[in-house]
Image (tube, rainbow, N blue to C red; front, top):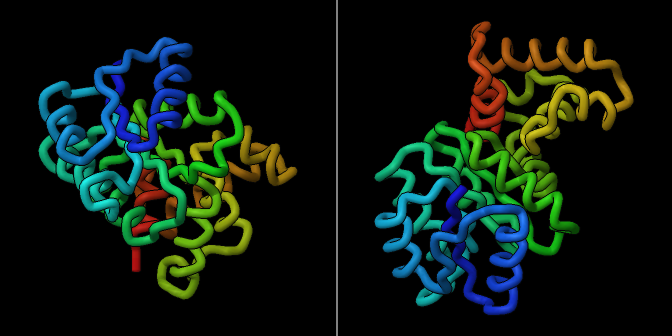
Length: 215
């Protein structure tokens, strides 16, 4: 799996490269600024991009804007964003096209290699990997919006864990309920979000995207 990595801090960038290579990822490019990231995404067509939000030369939203532009040119390009802070606008914009394959992790809350690598793999496969703090801020902002207000407290908990990419079994373990109960909650969520029955495995992703992007 080919990765384009963008991180301006040398030690962190080097550490990420070594970690990804240790888990058999191929580093197509590891860059430290926006222009080089744009070129790499255009020319190398990676399987997934791992991108810091703030890159030179602007140190504002350079990294994310490059990733968003790449997704406009190549819809569905998997992008995992790394950030120091919860940037609600950035998270919403990343989610807005509804294609899936997106993640948003806070750097200081990635506690081990397995957690990070799992997130990269989930995003590369078209899933989501959202830090709980990012999800919580987005949910809080929309708690009074419909159909957000139609979800029960338990359904919101299930949705939050779904957004993190958890399976029904993992959600059941986290909430101390049965998988059957989780399946019932997810079915209710799909109904309230207007997602009809489907055999498409991406319906969970669509539910998360619909939930987070309403308002």
